[in-house]
Length: 435
Ligand SMILES: Cc1cc2nc3c(=O)[nH]c(=O)nc-3n(C[C@H](O)[C@H](O)[C@H](O)COP(=O)(O)OP(=O)(O)OC[C@H]3O[C@@H](n4cnc5c(N)ncnc54)[C@H](O)[C@@H]3O)c2cc1C
Image 1 (cartoon, helix red, strand yellow):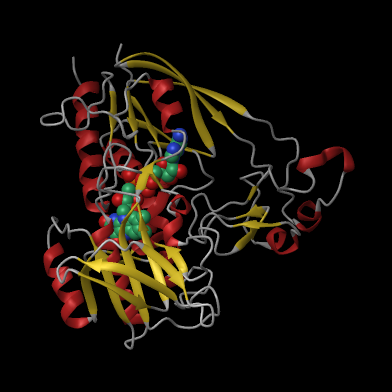
Image 2 (cartoon, rainbow, N blue to C red):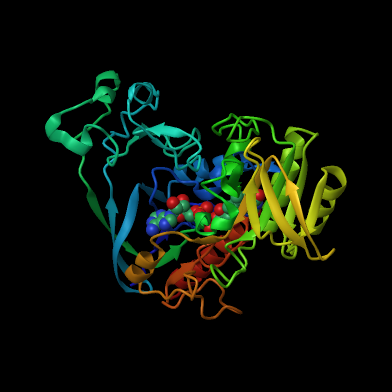
């Protein structure tokens, strides 16, 4: 028996693309996403290299197409908890967390958010702003419905006290549902696609770079949120300590990657996203000059080298071959001071800048080991999904019928994730249509 249905785990750009392709081919798709909305990391980006297209403008129509497809069954706020069976015939159990909001009734008007008194760090804005305990993760979220974060909701953390419930009071649609319980769904599928993506590496481990102690040292993902119109400053590039527009920005490459002390591999996208972010700094304010401190430039994709040339010629971006040793701070101005050896000039130098952006290593998502254990697949030494036949079957995992695409299996950018997702859909079809 070969079930004509597929489980896709993770709804970033890779999982979304694989789901759309499979749904178009006529297979039933169960797309399981751990967070309240689909979209993944791409939803957090401002523009995308090498075209500088607006990320959410490209992603949002895909999210809507995917969620609205008659063959796609979206299971958000859900996780796979058990899998048994074999290629063609898997039995999967999925746990759906309660949102405490009735999705049919919620109109996402936002009244509840305004009244909610509990403020918590906003993950979507990488801690640069605060959200409420009841929230919409981002304006283009799909489904566009509220979720109550049970970890922080004043009522849910201590029901006996019966405190708060303001969201319930103001919700005219009567959508708040305190009785919602965890649900378990059982699915029968013929194949499984893993597309669980990446997390940014915690760079506070590299104490010499001052992340967490020097205010004007931020990460690449935080920078994306700062320049984004839907971000905490509505797109104004202002530095954290005093709100000043930075006119000199230093981007440090390979922070925690290509380093045997942390992650020896190359995270693959940082040379290009630093170039993009430097271009954006200059577009936001033409008086801005950027300095990219690189180990060696990796610009292997289509039109990537030309993109770097444009950054140098049109946007005042200077590339310095150096791995800074330490970042200090001018106590009067709050300006970070980068100390480095320029390995082309063989000179130790210092540069005082307005803002430092650490382009941190990207690592497999937390929970990747649990996903691997549940599916019985192997991970490589860095925690990415092991694909044993890398040359000729690059999306096949160590378990027949289970495939992997996107960043969860190897560092890669959006075009490569999309290509790999479509390749995965083709491999799944080949398996499911077999006589
Ligand atoms: C600062 C920065 C800037 C970048 N800029 C660009 C750019 O300009 N151009 C470009 O091409 N690339 C860029 N990238 C790279 C790009 O973000 C990735 O290539 C892309 O997001 C990979 O997509 P993905 O679907 O594989 O993973 P993700 O986007 O990480 O999506 C994975 C999804 O899986 C979900 N998930 C995880 N675990 C589970 C689980 N156990 N169960 C269910 N769901 C789960 C997650 O919640 C998430 O929604 C940038 C990266 C960074 C860090």
